Image (cartoon, rainbow, N blue to C red):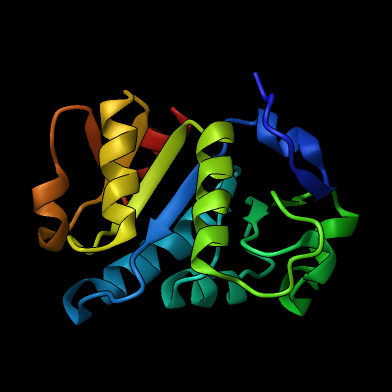
Length: 186
């Protein structure tokens, strides 16, 4: 199944645990910010494997709030070389417990570039089948990923919020704080 070449550091078996890739646009409307932050934080408290690039402000913020209540395993997809990445201090303890995997299509690329982000996203799409979209900028690259996931029949979830109503189409499941455990773990 995984024929794509990539570099890894950590517990590769996390890829076999039906991970959920989480995406949130960089620019997020204030009206959805609190709901997205709260829901994403609650997601990390579930016994799931959560994957992402961890690049948007929301993604970074929630990962920084990973704490003792959090049970989620983390897969960190890089848009730069794995040898040029230092695991953030707030999740270094996950390495020892086997709850972290860092993945990159690159070995020594120093800086994140647009073409590296595209390669990272392609790698993520080749390895992950479930996707949760917290917020989608209609003009951004995440909308393209959303559309691709829906058209390919992948498991797609979107945060239940009026700002995301345009993305509730056939095959997309609405997720909120109250139904998240049942929907994502059921």
